[in-house]
Image (tube, rainbow, N blue to C red; front, side, top):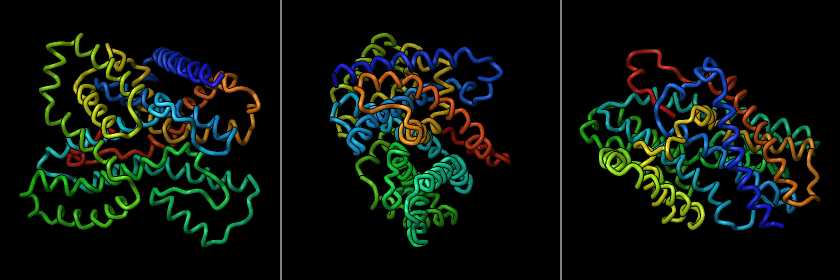
Length: 384
């Protein structure tokens, strides 16, 4: 029953992804035009949407075992574990790729870069923190002393999010927020990387000041994270450095390379261990081709996937909240039933997750995204 349910979930995931993409493709052009990704011609927008829904599926699988065992973990099945680890790896690679592209420039506008990162990442993250506090109070937990609230707030604001005393909040964020600390670790390594690439820029006081500010932040982040995962950001350098090589390969042998990369994708998902060096290297290789034009036979150019890509941060950060409300607060499923019955709730929960992502994107993310307000800012716009 367990194995048949896991196979069923894999099939339902593929069918639901196809259906959601098709439905978003049917949106009127005036609505699709409201998403920036629809105006870009890049496989990265399409892959983002696919990755975000893959992470949701991974956590939907874990949620069943949390509800039935009380622990946020699941049986060690490579495919379902990799539905979480491979997307996270590729998200890190995308971040590395976009920022390594900027390191080519001889000047960096550090003020713009960090302001744009704050306005891109923090508002939705703060909203999630507020939701955790609100749900804590609705569940009649004992009052916490002010010192406990202060400690939790400091941990949350430093992206070292932890549960509130006896309130196990990890499932509420589906464990997804842990990656944000790694993102900030990479962002604050950029001054050092920039000066390694452009040593002559050491003469500019702005670069030295930014390096001095970044070093203590890097120390904090590196002591709270697993160092080997930063290789995923660094591996993206090859997609930038060897851009012509990968584009030429795709141009000379389009069908052969595409078939090989589809097989590589299946191998990574089914035959590698999460965050192993082998998996990271293969994800890095796959990404080099995606960043330089590989589209899975045009799938990544689907407008529906591009829209999902635009929603990917909201999808990634809020799907745990939707699952928690559905299964823990409203109790809309009886977990005494089999896992197979649970799988059939997936399409409905997915629709709610996407709908909520549209709302949070339009009313929390998009209004607060930093827009360049000067010609100087416009030269350092970062896609992400």
